Length: 172
Image 1 (cartoon, rainbow, N blue to C red):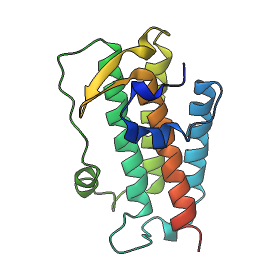
Image 2 (image 1 turned 60 degrees about the vertical axis):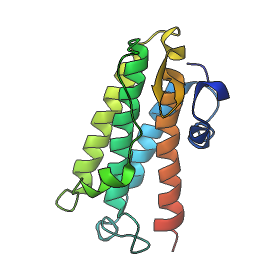
Image 3 (image 1 turned 180 degrees about the horizontal axis):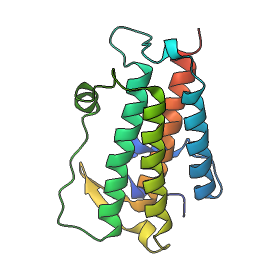
Image 4 (image 1 turned 90 degrees about the horizontal axis):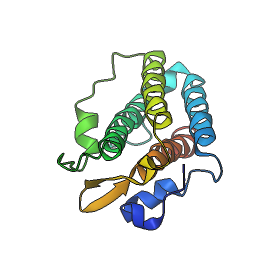
C-alpha cells in the first residue's frame, strides 16, 4: 500500500499519517496491533479508570475511543473501496461517542479483545483489496480521502493515543 499523498486526505489527518513508520504498511499495522494490545495489557488494574485531569477520559475510555474511531475509519475505507459515491459520510463527534460508551463495567481484557477483533476485521478488509483500491476515495467533511489514507489514519491514530497514554497517563 502506498503512503498517501497530501492531496489524498484532509490536512488534519496528516498529524496521524506522519506517525506511521515508513516501509511496509501491513508490517506497521501488525506491529501496531501487538504494541497497542501489549501496552494496555501491561497496565496495573488500579490505572484502568485513571484520568490525568477531571475533564479527560479514563484509560479504558481512551481504548474505547481508539476502537470506535477504527470502526468509523474502516467503514470510510470500505465505502471508498466499494466505489460508493452515494453514501453521505459525516464527521465523527468523538466526545458524543465517549459519552455514550459506558466502559465502567468492562474489564481491560474485554476491551483489548474488542480492539483485536476490530483490528482483525480491518486487516482482513485491507488484505482483500488490490493496489487499485488504495487510491479510491470517500468524501467526508469537504475532503476526498483515499483508502490508503484511511488505513494510515487508523494506525497513526492508535500510535497517537499510545503516545498520549505514555506521556500523560503513565509518566508520573
